[in-house]
Image (cartoon, rainbow, N blue to C red; front, side, top):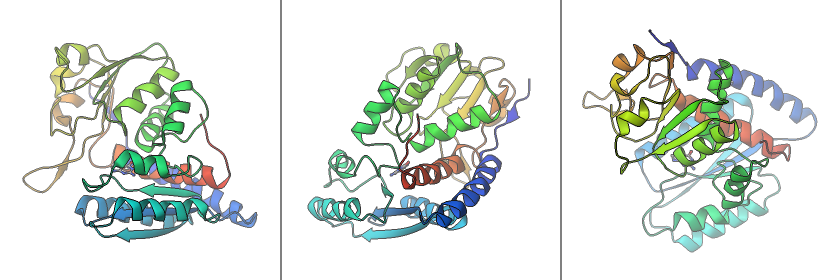
Length: 284
Ligand code: GUN
């Protein structure tokens, strides 16, 4: 079998067109969706992500502002900046780009963002709602993956989903979302034994390890759906995923490329969450 591509770029472009229209209508109702992005320090990858977010906001008519703080900013100062944004009624969404410098407690910062403006879906109140199956802001990467699966009518109910990676941002919420849709979910991570054996059981295999080509076709069951969350820069400067694409695509029924797979969807779902926040809604 040669897999069909799950083209995140294309789907993302379609969704952004729809959102552009939705934002126009909201503006006629005097609702002007606004996202504040807070960037601490000079991490080049973070800077590049933040630029992508600004560009996507511009395209859809969502207004955004970037608050840049020096690497040396104190935790207290950052918390005060967040408090200011929490209290600004014109701001609907707040995103603090991660990672933060070592002297700042990331969890403390996430706790400080109003759950009603937490468009990343990282606040413990929103994670708790996700665990309970209540309406909330869904973390953008898993939400984007789910949207890609749904766009192809890929069945989730009753399927075996194997998630490799247990980060708070991707792996953990991904498993919860698939469980909520009645998949049978297995979490794997760096200490997992017999990783290949477990991966081979997956109907839906989500790989979020952060390690170049950690998984190849020998980990993929014939006909499985393979979702590659990794973004790694190779020695030749090109981007590649956690999955060795060429061998995996020969086994999979669907596969995401890197780039143009999961990445563009993450930003797109951030826009969706910002619009939701502006409407005063969150979604299951
Ligand atoms: N750093 C890497 N991914 C993300 C994300 O989805 N949100 C935030 N805030 N920081 C990130």
